[in-house]
Every structure is written in C-alpha cells, then in structure tokens.
Image (cartoon, rainbow, N blue to C red; front, side):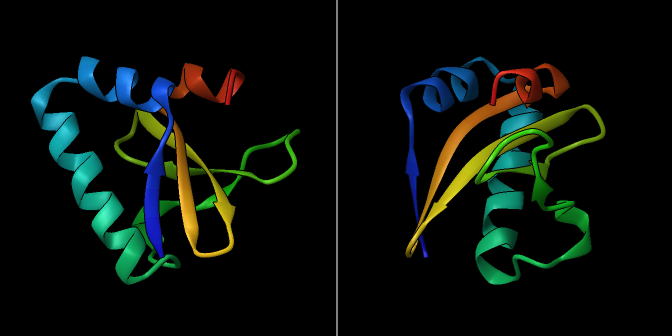
Length: 85
C-alpha cells in the first residue's frame, strides 16, 4: 500500500505543531505495518460511505479513503475534521 495526499491534507498537516506532525508520521508508519493495530482506532466515519478515520492523539484524527493499493489521505486535525471528512 502507498499513500497519496490531497491538498486539504497537505494544508492541514503544514499547520500542525511539530509534536503532532511526528505523531502523524508514526501512526502512518504503523498503518502500513499493521492496519489493525489497536492504537490506530481505525474505523469508518459515521454517516459516510468509504471514509475512514485514524486516531493520532486524544484530540487529533486523520481521515482517509482506500482505493485498491492506495490510501488517500484526506484531512488531518482536531475532531472537527470529522464533521467535514
């Protein structure tokens, strides 16, 4: 599996504090190694079709779509991003 980012994800990521960026990078590496790891909290975003969320910290999440062998990273930030995945 490989990652592809969207413009909103790139913009969101650039605005994150360095400590959160480090955690995003760690969680993405873990996602590649073991998508079922419990610390990811990998689950479907409620009310959507095909959009998933991954836990970054207690207050940060990222959203993604799965397309064949590509993971499309959509948004990253506080829980508010789940309202606009």
